[in-house]
Length: 316
Ligand SMILES: Nc1ncnc2c1ncn2[C@@H]1O[C@H](COP(=O)(O)OP(=O)(O)OP(=O)(O)O)[C@@H](O)[C@H]1O
Ligand SMILES: [Mg+2]
Image 1 (cartoon, helix red, strand yellow):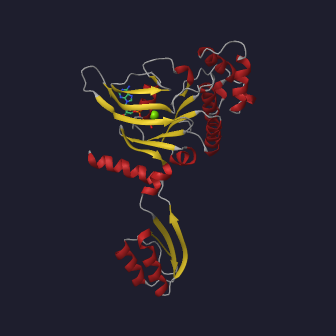
Image 2 (image 1 turned 120 degrees about the horizontal axis):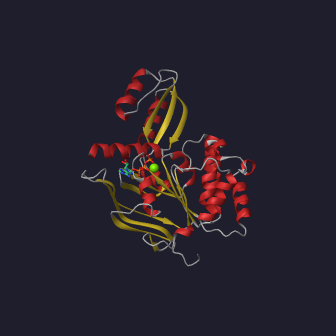
Image 3 (image 1 turned 90 degrees about the horizontal axis):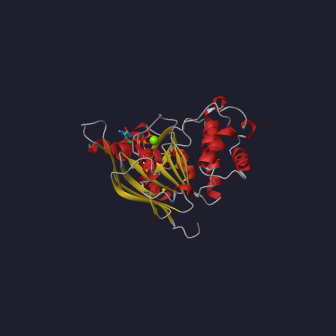
């Protein structure tokens, strides 16, 4: 795939309408969304429930048709089928034939994906090993835990060695250890140079894994780019902890700097905008207070995400 373009997934003004039932008004779920996933990156497609993430992946996988706009994968329009053998897909709610063993399940998908009989057994064994399921290879899927099933689902997505991998909520419903295991698997795909597009609303996973993100809220892209740049654009704040502060100084902090002060007297805590920090500290020291801690507050993606949702709600 050395001649493949740098932009592996290009989504351009994509529109999707659903008609809830015959004669009912159509509902627009994707309002002309655009974003690009570059070669070799872990791209986070982030948004709250119902934002349109799964719908977008289904359109990209050719499972449903777009109502407008275009998209291409590896330089091929999604109307073509040529690209599909290079794409692996973990659906949001994979359906498992639970009477199959892990090994039979993978063999089934390897056959569907056209993996030849020669080397198929080795390929399945290698994948089971990679996702940490060798010990359960001959146990039926109905005996697997949620984390094991999710790892089997990822093995399924990789069975034909795709260069692009779409994962719809790969960490959902997993405990912290299960999530770490999936994160490690995704990082390994990244090391191997694969391009990963991952739907999620678990923002800490995004912050840990993704090179770039697109944030989608109610069918519209709110941001596309590096998470770091996104966070830097936000106003910075600092958390301050002081001791031995007189009540009138506390009041001054609350009224002048809109600092929501918690605690009293011996230990108070509040957050101030970075631009006010110097003045706040000067007042504290001049009035004999003790400065116990001054910590830069990193605006979390979560809070920005919530404010995007609130802004959307306010517009409606
Ligand atoms: N087949 C369908 N018919 C009608 N509406 C649909 C259909 N599929 C999805 N929708 C609607 O489209 C919107 C987007 O759904 P989608 O599943 O893409 O969201 P999502 O971002 O994946 O959410 P989640 O985080 O819950 O998985 C929702 O309002 C949903 O109800
Ligand atoms: Mg979804």
